[in-house]
Image 1 (cartoon, rainbow, N blue to C red):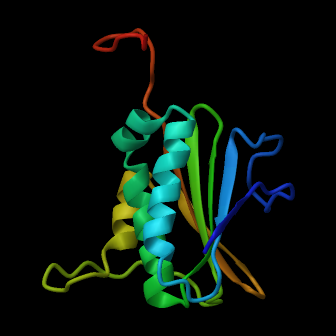
Image 2 (tube, rainbow, N blue to C red):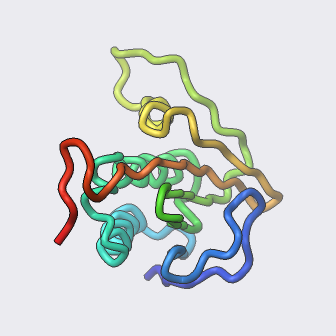
Amino acid sequence: MPTERIRLDRPPGTAMGLTSAQHRELTFPPGDPCAYDEGIAFTRQTFADWHLTDAAEDCGAVLVAAELLANAIRHADGPRSLSLEHDGDHLRIAVSDTHPGPLRMRRPRPDRIGGHGIRIIDRLTHHHWGTGTAATGKTVWARLALPPTGPGPGRTAAP
């Protein structure tokens, strides 16, 4: 069973000074057969706790988390951790696994099932994603802009 924990150390390239209310992480045991379902449930619950359910849905955040988790399951021995954070304007979703190999965006082939996940992430994030490698594996991250909230053209303030 995975465990939720709040990271106190910060990986390179992430925002500093986030509180536990802005950052959550779920760790998985090796080969966890429930990692995908538990990761998606954790993602949805975290966005609900942050009152970002609609915003996360609008920007495709759950789909991005699903694709990152699926890639770790398909191309590695499953995810090692799922990290979620927000700064009010953006969401950052990161999945770490134990496979040290680089991530490659494949050439699209409509006649092939699968192999489109990173291209979907690339489109949803407007090219704001990347990878970090370490001796123990890699982390694939994606950064999504949250849609504006509050009064404005075509929008109403939340009650």
